[in-house]
Length: 163
Image 1 (cartoon, one colour):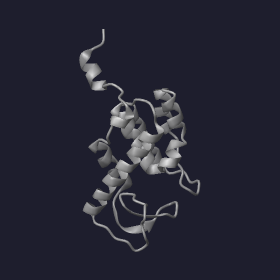
Image 2 (cartoon, one colour; image 1 turned 60 degrees about the vertical axis):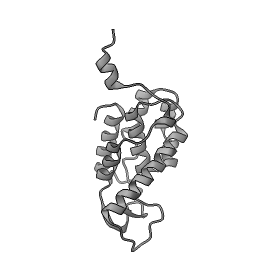
Image 3 (cartoon, one colour; image 1 turned 90 degrees about the vertical axis):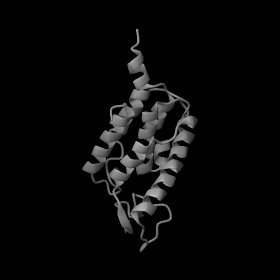
Image 4 (cartoon, one colour; image 1 turned 30 degrees about the vertical axis):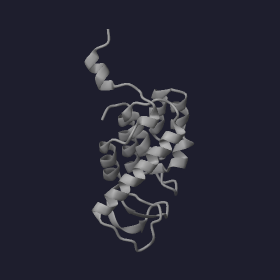
């Protein structure tokens, strides 16, 4: 017999179109990205500002923490829509949150072409979570980035419901 308390803790997978990003995911992305109040070139030579924002960023641009959080919220919601577009199967909230976190870091195009999405769409949920580990842990120059390994580990734990 299934333990009803455990069942409620785990939840049920729901249609992805009805999922929204949890506030803890937004905070997690902000912590992972870190805040920088001025535009800078990231390791991929892309102008970046605030909490990892790259869209439309110009050299010399400045922001404040409040503006950066507002922009992060908008951007994360756009990435969530991208995840909803390419993942077509029901998910647990925590799986969705992990996928949005990965997509925000690597870009929605790369995420949608990833083995994570392939496995998820075949409803091989364990393999989808496992695919997060070791994926995109190098910078654009091919250098291993320990911080990305930690981020992928955290995303994997979220995907498995172990946060």
